[in-house]
Amino acid sequence: MRNFYLFAFLVSATLGMAQQQVLLETQWQLTALTMGNSSYAVPSNQEANPAPLAFVGSEGSYMLETNLCNTLFANCAAVDDTSFTLSQPINATLSLCNYGENNFFEGLYFSFFFQTLETPTAYTYSIVYLGDSPTLFVTAPNGDQAQYGAYFAGTDSFVRQSLTITPNPATSYVDVALSGGQSGELAVYDLTGRKCQSQRVSATERVDVSRLSGGCYLFSVTTPSGTVTEKVLIR
Image (cartoon, rainbow, N blue to C red):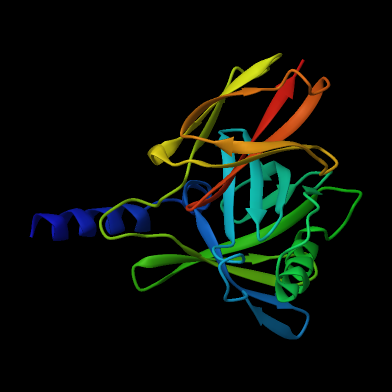
């Protein structure tokens, strides 16, 4: 009975959140994609599932991150209760998927975010509740739409794998810390999407970055819970 009341409280609290807060604090999972007059389901294989979407950062400085086989990331110039604006450049890593159907679907999905290559792009969104769980609908300027569901497990809050990298900026090393005691595969990308470094990391790991040239890099870690990315400045 105690768990029932806790669950009811969490659902009630979520329903009372502003849309912007729900958007930013929820780990989303892509469930459907509509491009033009055609609808596409996410491929049903382990490589393509889950296909997460998250807004990483803190108030006033968010980065949109989503992935299938590769990771797409873009800074958010603005976020409010009905829309978010992605600033240029929008970047993505460049690796082939293991399954041909994933390569095809990922090309469609990433093109949803590459609406323009020159100016900031505003996407409208709405969050509706199908039963107790929120569903996110994101609409591109051309009318294409992506639909996402939220991870929700029992009486737990929305689940997001977290990644902490310190120091940032860094010079010769960084300390990588993953929540939940999980290990994963670390890949380091420059802002053109080129993979510069990779290795297996434990839940807490010191990583040598002394061979990286000065600049901004994306540290992406893939675990059984999904992929998380942090931007790190190397001096």
